[in-house]
Each structure stands twice: as structure tokens, then as C-alpha cells.
Length: 171
Image 1 (cartoon, helix red, strand yellow):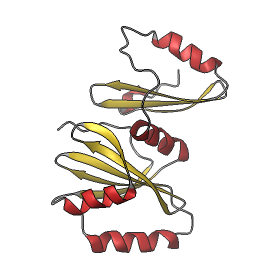
Image 2: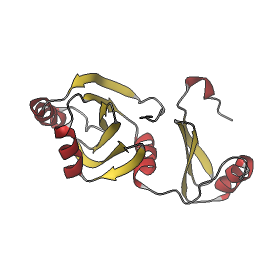
Image 3: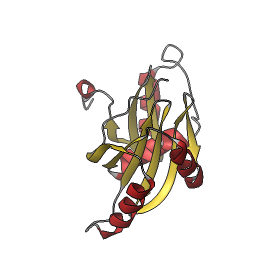
Image 4: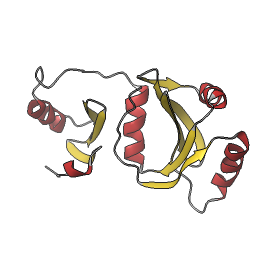
């Protein structure tokens, strides 16, 4: 199964830890003890997919992931049900900034308002329209399994996240 290639996370606290219920319980007991409220996600990677558990202010917030080749929102209950059934899930915990988390949540939980290939839509024209909108907009560009996020607020590009480091131009 193809998994998404997402922009890198801000800070990885641990990666590739084998799943166990006792490890998860210990982790969630320690999160509230941190000096700053935690903002990030716990990912569970396995052969057939990738699960995300979003954590805001050290509290479980939302879940979703790539299941059977498609991104899908999950309830917290569904997340833990799936996780408990996995034989070889590898857990990673990473911190994030709020905008990156919002982008990832948007990708997993929302249906696109516009979806088209670049030969049908002028990217330059689309960017200009986004720069004219005084609201909040998220542009997600996908090429094969690589995702790039562009977050616009009040007519300005506020943040861009690239799945590949060589694409970090500010233009």
C-alpha cells in the first residue's frame, strides 16, 4: 500500500516504538506533566496504513489516517480499536506548530472544495484568488504520494510545508 509522503514534523520525540497498551497508558499519563501543554500527534505506522492521533493542549483531540489506500477521519474509539488489532504497529510522537496540525487535520478530515489536475486549473490563478480572499484557506498540492501544504490567512500566505526539503522557496 502506498503511504503519504508528508512534510516533516517540527520535532520528533520518539519514533518506531513498538505498540503496547501499557506503553500508550504510560505515555498519556506523562503528557500532562510536561511544563508546556503538548501540541502534536501520535502516529502508528503499519504495513497497510498510517494512523494519526491528534493531541492539543495535552488532550486527545481527533484521529484519522490512511486506511486501505485512502485518507479517512476516525473517532477516537475507532483509532484505538484499530491500533489494538495491529500486530506490528510502530509508534512515533512528534510536536507540531498549530498551523501544520491544522493542515494535516484538514487533509484527513475535510473533503476538498475543489479538486483538479494542474492541466485543468491554473495554479497561478488559484494562488492569486487565494491572496484576494480575506478569510482562511488551505491549499494542498499532491503529486503522486507527496503532499505540500499552503496556509493562507487574510490575503497572505502564512505558512508553507513541503514534503521534500529542496522545495522550500518562499516565492
